[in-house]
Length: 363
Image (cartoon, rainbow, N blue to C red; front, side, top):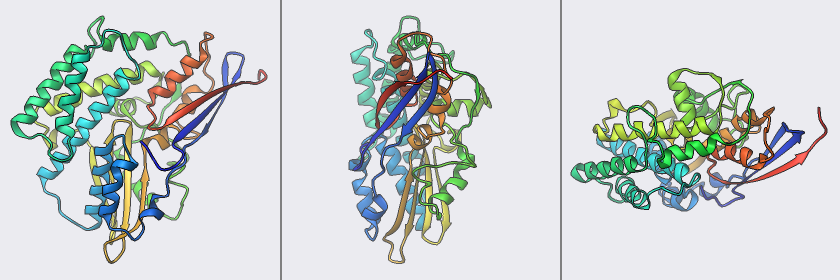
């Protein structure tokens, strides 16, 4: 995500011997979009989205369009909803693959398979004329074939031995960091109404530093998997999150292959909420987690207020998942930078980050 502000997260780790004593996060600065677009037609913000958000552009567009349509009380036909969901899911697969093979490059990853994936996903995500009918089926077939070549598993969920997917997992298994077992908290569709009402509420800090009753829940592929399986306690780390990404790629491709029917989709891919006259919000489940847009239009239909909340604000909250995963962890080898960096990258921030270490006295 590229924004017109300081788009960087600073992480400082305090070490007492080999134990992480404290984790400090200086979040990124958010652009003043509400001020910049106040009084402008909604189309001006829609047209600016590709420059404001270069990652997850389809999800951003789906969220804003859905919020504007709900604020106008427009009825959206099923074909439009399905097309929007397909674009979001195709982009989600693309971003999950990027996190899989770009963040964890392997020497035997097939360049031809990756190029085929990129072409096929572009056909599905293309905002101008997304693929339909036989073209869409052909694109999905190409995606499945490319994933097979990369060793992404089918029904059994186990990557083929020696494949790029298996090598990614093996490399992360070597990262030496022992986290403590904690109770987890996950963001879900059930939280939407609470969040969207607060986005347009009276607390201007909520978009910068959100919370749910003092909680800063995790969002993203692993959180979705844990919520689906109703698991709230256990070890979390780069390997678990990587496996969740792989499993989600398989599940989403299966949905596309089976016809991408709305009634067979996972809950909450794209949801919209009316909040009153000319006020509405939308939530979209994108690669990194749940994304929110909220708008309020003036009587002339121009933008009076606009707020957004990205998954990174939850995952890199000062009391959020990154802090909970690292606080109290034991670094069992001296390659502590690699171990901590792997945890940060497993949460896949949509912004750059810096990582610093400092020594403190033993507790």
